Amino acid sequence: MRNAGDFILVWRQSMSTIFNPVRRRFVQGLAAGGAASLCGAPVWAQSLNLLDAGDPQHLRGTEFDLRIGEQRVNFTGNERIATTINGSIPAPTLHWREGDTVTLRVTNTMAETSSIHWHGILLPANMDGVPGLSFKGIPPGETYTYQFKLKQSGTYWYHSHSGFQEQTGMYGAIVVAPREPEPFLYDRDYVVMLSDWSDENPHHVFAKLKKMSDYYNFNQQTAGDFLRDARKNGLGATIENRAMWGDMRMMPTDLADVSAYTYTYLVNGATPAANWTGLFKRGEKIRLRFINGAAMSFFDVRIPGLKMTVVAADGQYVHPVTVDEFRIGVAETYDVIVEPDQNEPYTIFAQSSDRSGFARGTLSPQPGLSAAIPPLDPRPLLTMADMGHGGMGHGAKAAPMGEMDMPGMDMAGMDHSKMAMSGMNHGGHGMAAMLAHPASEMGNPGVDMQTMAPQHRLDDPGIGLRNNGRRVLTYADLKSLFADPDGRDPSREIELHLTGHMERYIWSFNGIKFADSEPLKLKYGERVRITLVNDTMMEHPIHLHGVWSDLEHADGSFGVRKHTINMPPGTQRSYRVRADALGRWAYHCHLLFHMEAGMFREVRIDV
Picture 1 (cartoon, rainbow, N blue to C red):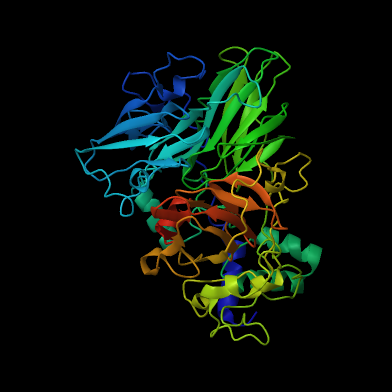
Picture 2: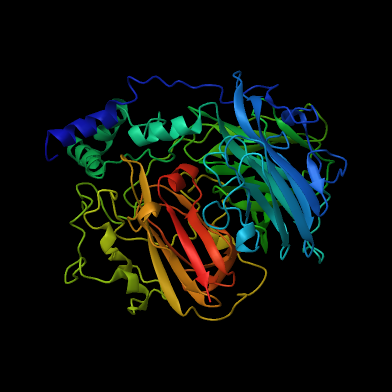
């Protein structure tokens, strides 16, 4: 430990939870809560079978009238104001057909500007719904008409791209029926929309994070943990370990910025106590369309007693893979097939990645039944290897900012904007080349760490899911049913580092916040490789609007087509992009507060 400041930080990390008793709130919510829809039926009461065309919360056809408004809701015993579409949370599920042209007249009845982004849908830039880029937004009292032809099928979703409206309830599912028969059979079809709700105003949540980034982290290491580790590893090694985290101004329990201390986790707008239920008959095959519509929460999903066969990822068919569990990042979608072989209920269990809470629903042969809810898994801890500092054992120190220069390399003078053309073997994904960092990160007060040994880790199920006795899905398991749709080798590579400063709650690309950044420019028709390196200790789901992201394996071969790529801490992952959509597009972390804090770029595709 170098000075008194280091000691204070280590002591704070060890003692923080002793004087902060766990103040768990209504994690399971109300059994009779929820938002009331315009037709008067509470959202929580609707156990929906998508095959039932008469359900009022499912809209079908080619023309739609959507109304954005505000409404009182009660999930936890306290009434709050939510942002709704057609009076419900989630918004109505929209059913479209591939090849159709859909028209959506969206009226904003609120006193502030709003918008709708059609996540993962290929469309013209002025239909994408990002205020300030593709259009001006929908002012109060006005109607904006979206119209576009559907070029795809599958499971997608829609949400506001204005302020924090998505956090207050403005999100819904999209189901696009294919023109051709699907490569799998099923008898029932349910959307399972996962989300997080807070009674707090999201502006207040964000302000708290800016003042104290670990405000919602009540799983910090305690003095008891320190003593246990000292007995196991020795006092000196334990002090060195705490000091190493202190040098980075971070904690190994920083798994989520916002926890169940303020969040109640929902399934289709239902709290765990309300228990959303999907009905089945024994022996039927059920398609579950999982969508993570949360603002800030990753979920680890399983159905105890049932295997899940993953058949689609982000709306695109994949070779079927059978698993017990999968992690779904914010904005991702997974379609799975399950086949209950018993005439009994099964719990859909989605625990938050920080293990502070869970969402829960039920598959049941009849209404009113429920199955046992499994306990939350043990809280995981981050390691130096997770942070991309592989091989660092006790006594090793993470290099502080400004001391990351590699021998023989003039980091300050290197033109990192041309790194992709420098022959650094990115196509082969060599790890050593990634030790170079953009000059804009050096000495940057908005960057508190840099990964030293990033890896792809496509076969890693994720922090907290390794060796848990269950078969957990990984990105390496996902293989599109089709070959590389483009086939060309990328003509150039763009490398971006995901950066941030935890204590200041600043997030960015290459250490540059959106407000200070220049657009990334692509030429229409070109094939580009984008390589992301996560220099932070948080997992980031990265979404590029307008085009597909074709994820590569570590050897550079095509793996799976997605619209959102999860980036765990300390990882390097690459994907190919075909710049076939003219216009200005958003490119950002889909954690809402990270995007607001600066992890956002504009991508321009010009002729």
